[in-house]
Image (cartoon, rainbow, N blue to C red; front, side):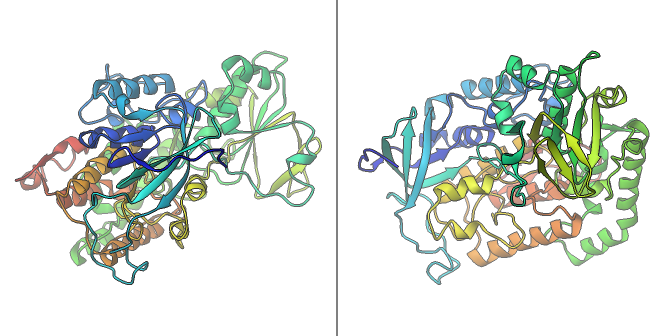
Length: 524
């Protein structure tokens, strides 16, 4: 792998891998430790730079996707910011808090090895229950870094390592095909969404214009790809784009339902009583059970609006599952404004199927029908866990596996059996930026020894309780999503940090207020 290796050198107490949203949030909160941030590219922003198309926009309102101490300009603007606006906001945040001085660009982490003691790491020593101080004054992890594409590797040593490489980008998830039915038999072009993101606007238009395009997938990236294809094929000579989809998820045109703001249904303290959550008391669980008809009614109420507002039934896009299951698994997507207008013009077509594979002229389906195509775009997701496995050594690599498929992280941040390491950006909610910031604050206070972690057994039990809640809430539980109990989750994190909720004595008057992390203040 390397042509030369230097001896490990302690540069800082804290090392951070990745300078996306999570990486810069962690670097800001830990800036007093002078962390070193390794970023493989030449800029910050993560997926907002590497996995965005020309048409990609934020899925939230500005004020729902902002750091608590750095507001958006024009934050009351109801439009969804473009990916370039999001990048500008993140860059402004990093410059305002002088985070960039910690970042080493064009520095790719290619290997990580553990050199610390394994005391207090549960099954590794048979002594669960006691975590040592996070900063011990001696190296725990060594990190191999390639700079500017060089084959040379330089090793660094850190007392604590934070992984912020994220769940998206870098490693595409490619479907597995039967023998002689994969991309190799197709005479056209096959690109994953990750490859398409690297094209500039002119190259993307050239790829799509006048071509028969198939887009595989119906989540946000697939929908955006279909829109770009339709826009490139306007006019009589333009070819339609066909979306090939297996599972249809609910889409929303905006964040109002029958004139009511969306947050009223899922993002208030009162709404949290409708949903199961970890650590419920018997009375809370009973209340949740008694209110289950209300929860189902809310889901039906939202579905009725979406079916009225969008021609989902006309195009066979009505999901087979309730809306609340998509919300509980963080799979709700905003539909571009003119999407169905393009479908009405015949520029976007739909094909639902359970199985498909390639033939030389395009795609073949399990009903023996065929779709001719010049270009096939795979919006089939990313394998974030594979990124972690590529750098983590054993036995820690094996610890990433869990029966549910989710990486078992306490508070979405600490693996109970991996010492002196944290993960930020591997848990989803209604606002991933807010989630990353909250966990970065929690992590900084832990590293500064403002509080102690529970025992290993207690952390594993908490993780299991969260997994059970997700399993009961949605069939798509293999995503670490806390959207239906995010307020309760943040309450527990703040309590663990020694913070108090300042509205706790007046919760009823605030029950229908939208939640914000700014509602927390530090207690004595």
